[in-house]
Amino acid sequence: MTHNTTIAQLLETLHTPAGVYPRESIEQLLARRAEAIPALLDLFRDPDALYQEILVSKSLTPVFAMYILAYCKETQFCPLLLSVMKHPRKDFEDFWGDILLENVPSILFSVFDGNTQTLIEFVLDPKIPTMIRNVVLRVLGSVYANGKMERSALLDVMRKVHELEKSSDPEANFVLAAFIGHVMDLQLPEFVDEAKTLLRDSLRSFASKSEFEAALAMPAKESREKFLGDHHNQAIGDIELRTAWWVIEAKPIVREEPKIGRNDPCICGSGAKYKKCCGA
Image (cartoon, rainbow, N blue to C red; front, side):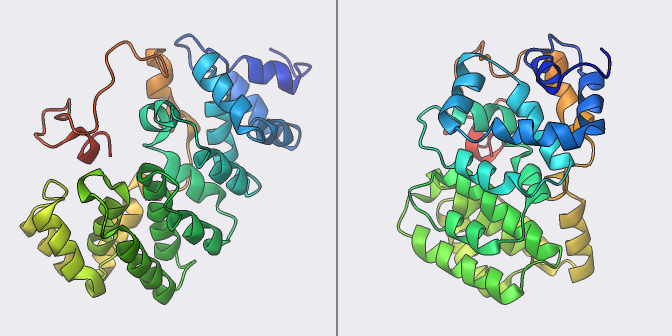
């Protein structure tokens, strides 16, 4: 591969890496980011074509593109990513759930364009699946923890989230899981009673009483450092570290086993439901 290789040719090498990490292609795209970024962004302008590329053609190019754009902190990608995330495809979980949910919060946080109102409106849109809104609420937590959102604004979002979701089925509601997580990890005593009720009545597997109380009792500085130290709450800083594990397996996207139900016992043996454990 030479520097005469076109951006389109470099992107094509990411289509199916066949178990070999495409380090050289990614490095060239990063070195030529001024040329590459417009082409990478174009991959996400048509959500229907994107899902066709990923779910039918089994291409990994858009997946790598997201990590590259996140690494480059490309804020133009933020509205495109949100548009793709809320696209009403019935098979969206085959993409977001199986491949990227682990790192989507980091990707979105990496490209956050400073418009918290857009993220808030996304979280409060009941037409968007709760698994996807969970991701955006988690990103708002990262925005707040990094000093880019006022505490009063976060509290207002949390209040509206609880009001919006309180009549839903908590066991099938990922937004409420993120709600409890923020009460614990960001130490929001204003919502302790609401979180305790959810943990007692419906989301018992999310955290034990002792875990909940320990999180709230942790010194504020230590709690913040713990939150910021979690890779889910950090920007993408190493593409290979975040992606190599599933590339080497060479079996992303293709499901060889029956799909695990969200209410099935988790495959890791924790005893919790899949949606509350490895599928969270």
